[in-house]
Length: 167
Image 1: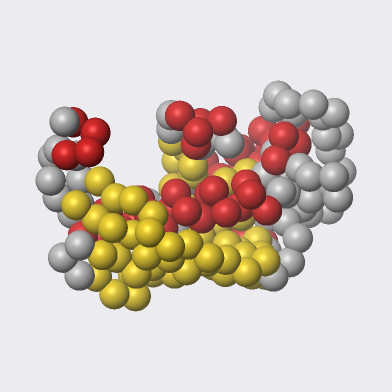
Image 2 (image 1 turned 60 degrees about the horizontal axis):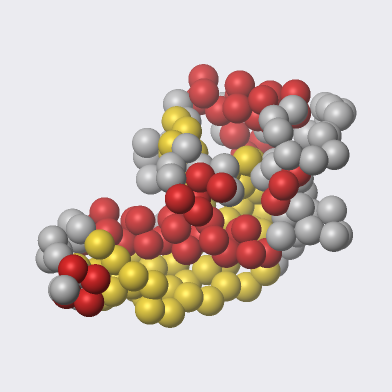
């Protein structure tokens, strides 16, 4: 199976000036699907940033779209941080069997810019897992280049109720 990290970059496709899917975005999706990636449009804030792609093998990704851009013409750092926070937190819950989780601490280092129209992926790692805490790391990668390195701690809970919210 061909690695998506080597997706061809020589194709020159028109990028839209504002929002919406364009040919260059749809072509990325067309390449992901045959490789076994599945898109979860998600809900809430994550839906606003485009949902999450899953490989089914513990890797997650997103397609950087025009609305993710900053004034420098690359993906905004806050977009990448939101994606990393979601993936690491979601993976902490999955690894622990927790029903809910909350970010306690999150930090990241930006290593390189992420160009618009590219697919970036992360394979989260559990560094340590206790009864109530998950220590996670991950690197956001595009074309074999580390774009962002992230580390965090998540409070995890198997309780079905949240006393502060459900009271």
